[in-house]
Length: 419
Image (cartoon, rainbow, N blue to C red):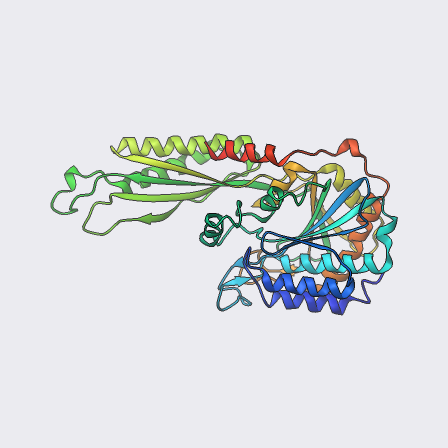
């Protein structure tokens, strides 16, 4: 394997993208960097472009199964990160830049050795924009201009048919924190989330002259926050529910009783069914708080991402590869966290896994996040991933896979958003 030989080249690509972070659907420099690398490796490469900055390319087409290796392009909005872009506030403190470099490391080795020709499945590389759910005003503009339909890059790609010919999805992701040993992680489930916005409406009057005839919208929101706080005791621990109500907008001033105020919160759970239950409870709390103080409330629900339950059958191949690997000493298994990703949406359509890897210090999305073991991330870990692909070769059981339609996904999302 040539991972060691190409390490310095891959490291340069990784550092180049890290130093030029871009937010979702704006990853034009990143796209060009990837494109130039791929063309250098394979001048005759066939690349399908999608969703402003997305790209898809195939090795060994025409086989019975198609496995996608997926890398995310975007950075996070984190203007106080030590390597943030001074103009945009973007920073690569989620590790996506290493995903791209890992994918390119795999592509180059597979193409140059022609090992992919021996696989009994097609291997498709998908470089996808906009995993992070942020910069929403810009994405709303894209929606109004009919450039995109979804804020998330994977749902958008699903709508465009990018995954119609794909049977399995493989992603990798940085693990938060610093580990004593080089570590990989399997079966780490992610939460799903939606956004709730509650606009409480009252009646404004002069706060000094006539507060008596007012209906205080701010007081309604305070009552709602109290209800949310008291309800936490009744939320299931195993669902790892996360709520974060904040004041988003208001017409408040010190001499006028507030006429309206908008409170927003995300709602994270490990399952769709419980997400819907908790959303209904929040709606009831908002309606009751408004009614108690003679006001009204308008409720808006915006779907984020679906929960991600990693496919345990596919993870068996990752664990088998770990067992025969002599370079990685440690692994984690079967954890769940309340972070979310649009890999959950893709996993509705096809079985997916996301293998975590160490090599970083600091907090994911934090100001101190950075890689500290690039050799592991860009040489050792890609070599292990090739072992995963080798374990899958000739061993994938079609009867243990599933495939659902985009139309089914769209119906599910709409049903959740109409709570």
